[in-house]
Length: 526
Image (cartoon, rainbow, N blue to C red):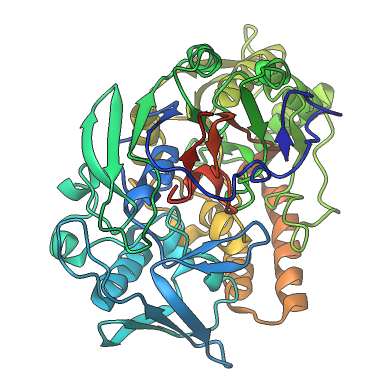
């Protein structure tokens, strides 16, 4: 919902849709100054779910589809599509005469290569495309996904931020993660990569040969990296930045900035992402491998305090792996562990970790710097665990260091993270709990190293079940087991906001908001 000069009403109730201000005739020209908090190792989300790549990548490398605010699929690189009645194939008709930015033709071979690459190396793609056996290309403008079993969620998985299409001729035969095209991307999108000055900015220029003429309307996008939230807020208020997503300002400033005459704030455009805050526990730590210890930690956490202190009340308590936002699959019977420090202490004693000299054991808490709320959660945990004799050390790392420490080196005990539910549990939730998705070096996957055969079976059943009632039942049972085992302590489904100067129009016209391709964005500087 849009929040304008009238401010926040009842927390985050807005005044209308984020697109209600758009003029009927877009204006051409100008430079959009977009701000991001973090800078990742590359710019294309082909093998990662990094926040940076999810925002920048779709402007260059598009997807087969995009989705409107009601989650209806809208053509992008695919002009039409159809699903077989038996659920075992999806056929995409591709746009003709589309060119890569280097002048090569875009064809079905690029689609086939990208889908199979996502299946092999993408943290969510490993589950998303698990049932894709092959991608047939009977002609240059037709791609047919052949499935071993139905995938009832699959048609929602083709947005650019989730499943980007990359040029086969630049990626085939090369290591995906270290490919130079990740840092200087070549796409089909409305914007062409110009330069990346590490630690400073990325420049994207208008694609004059874009297939959807006369779009795009902007001449240029400059993406600036500003790690400090207060500095981002000041830049937006002063007019030095035009747009920022993923709550670019301190959450404490949301209400006051909503009254700024030149700014608007919206919470629209995040349904595709499904924001969720979790505490991931490293089960390779022998202490945390004990379920009683994990349950003790859950009893030591006051989720109401986490919501109010870390997220300024901007969200809801969400103790189950599947967020309440996914109403169809959320199990309301799964409740949070009651805040009970005495019970926590008793469980720790029973688990063989009594207090000796004022201390039980120590833990390292890492937090994803993509969201400032994670740092506040880490600080809260350190204070909450201290009375129990758990000595917590908070390690503050940049984004690249954080990803490496957690998912490659596994040098952590607690990880405060944002493992988005996305739009379907098979895509956003399964990756966190599925034993087959534990793969050191694969970011935002099964970081806890959790393995439960029944959970695996339930998740795999839900991934292929076309009967909605049976699929729901499998997810319900999964949530019950996960909440008992607690490899991950789920915390909050938090709201996210986009802050924009009011002259920026059409920045949120799809369900993925700032993660769209920005072909429709224009500047109205009357």
